[in-house]
Image (cartoon, rainbow, N blue to C red):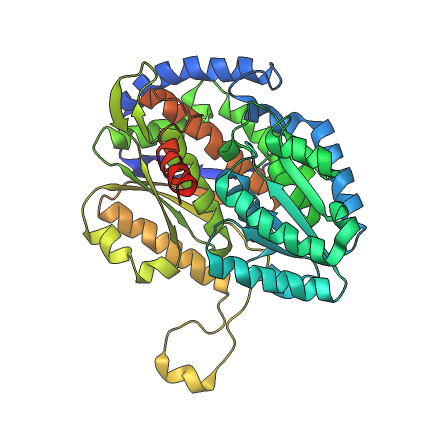
Length: 443
């Protein structure tokens, strides 16, 4: 049972404008899938739903914590996560949500993500890295790839490893950590080069891997309480495996989104009223895009199904997209995400030079203003019959983020079941990869 003051709240189900009959049909279907997930949770990592087992893995947390402590003993000033997609999106999401988007301006250990082969980006990152190395400081490279052969990751790793070797020469191995599947090509290379290694369970896919060593190691390095992250995920997993849809927030939100899909509402907008949650939205965007956007169903029949995930930030995007959301086509379902309280608050001071602007904000807190805006938006959505649900996190914490991410992963599995697609493969991604390899192989 999750302590009341820690639980995330799910509100405004009625504002989704879904008929009771839709929930009744979904409940009959999802009860079967919830039963499968319950059984999978007892099978350790021996099922396609292996991500469910990660929050229960004490040995995993302990091994990650030991390596993080040993690596921190090198007194690094820079950590570069070299990975793309599921290999870095979850890590970035939790880091920014809890440490803030300006963490690198405040903390001694700075974390960067090499997640594209944009040459200008990588050149700029290499310059920052070289500045640290020239001062004889430690830079840690965390190479993350489930397959161990991702083109972008291998290319970026080659550039940054070369730079590391120039300055650390014979000791460079101490500054490299490889996170990958056991016996992948990257794993074999790491063992050969005597890099530290962390294994990803074979049945845990990249976009479901944030609770594995993929996320835990870099998050532990930058001070995130990974035990609390796991604890929050573990606690909400119990709720998300309930057979009753009324008691199961993941099944209920999946049924709600599926109900919108049945009404030709194919866009799902995650509207986050906290700037530092933007990367959470981007992590969910990948989760939904790769898990649900499928050419074929489980039987191999061509169906071309999918839900288009979008991300908006309150109150920023109210001044760029609110006109579309409230006046445009009825093609979007929205999940609002807010905090009950932020980690800090600011009271608006008296500013005589601004009196003539008369905005009635003097003496109010920014939390109060943000809350008023979020509530106002939801009232406007109700009035305009724009379907939505609302989720309230108690405050920024590892426990709350663990709940949020695990709920969304289980929700996605339920949605895949309703859409009759495999949530764990991404066969069409190979189309661009195959063409890229052809071009690279032939110049």
